[in-house]
Length: 261
Ligand code: SF4
Ligand code: SF4
Image (cartoon, rainbow, N blue to C red; front, side, top):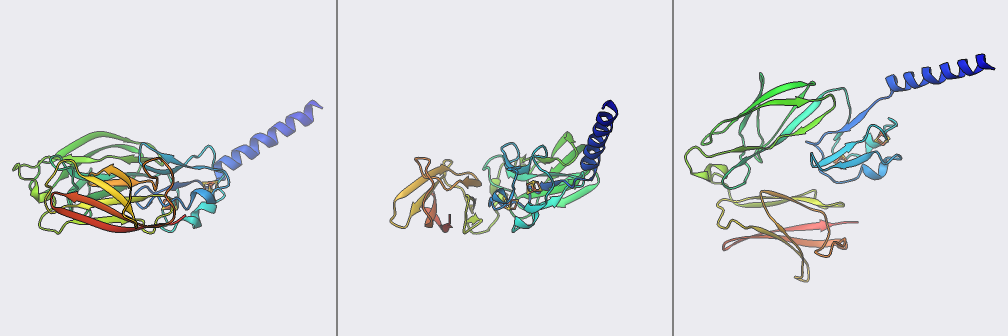
């Protein structure tokens, strides 16, 4: 009897080891993810969870069994087979206006990238400790050191630059003011971004109206804000067309947004 028990125990340990070694692990790319939420219902183990620290979804490896169902559920291909590498990502903003700085240069060790026009950058790196430098025309450069990345990590580092001349108009240049929502249509909330030619007031407010002109929600607006699709009472708004509106002095920016359930 003892012999059979020992054999059984051996088989169990061996299978666990093989499973642990061979199981494919997956992760969410926080740079590509639009927070649409499509992947959540695809997971039979509820392993896709919100991570408030990085402001995105991630896969809880203690719940994930590696079935791979979520891979095909993402319209943005933001779910990938994790291979130990990590993401270092974030946004560069102006300390005076809180608005993003497009096309800033971000350098990590010998790697260098140019931010997109919304000030976003990202690196795919191995586990390690890194130093990051960031610079942009008209701003003082900054350095962040001792950035510790673990394996399969996602590390958000938002960078704030101070204008070197005291003139912050470089952040927006001569571009026209814009208000964007994505995803749109939206199922589980949407990111709303604003780019102003000139900031007139310090307290911008985002207002969401239904098509009857009734205000359903207002939120403090910085360069970007996430609207979760809830009204001011915390209830999900019905499917339909809504208007996002931001007033900047005499300028009012509006954008149509479609909510689907
Ligand atoms: S691999 Fe399977 S269990 Fe893991 S997060 Fe994706 S759907 Fe869920
Ligand atoms: S389906 Fe893709 S884009 Fe949507 S929340 Fe999941 S990972 Fe993000």
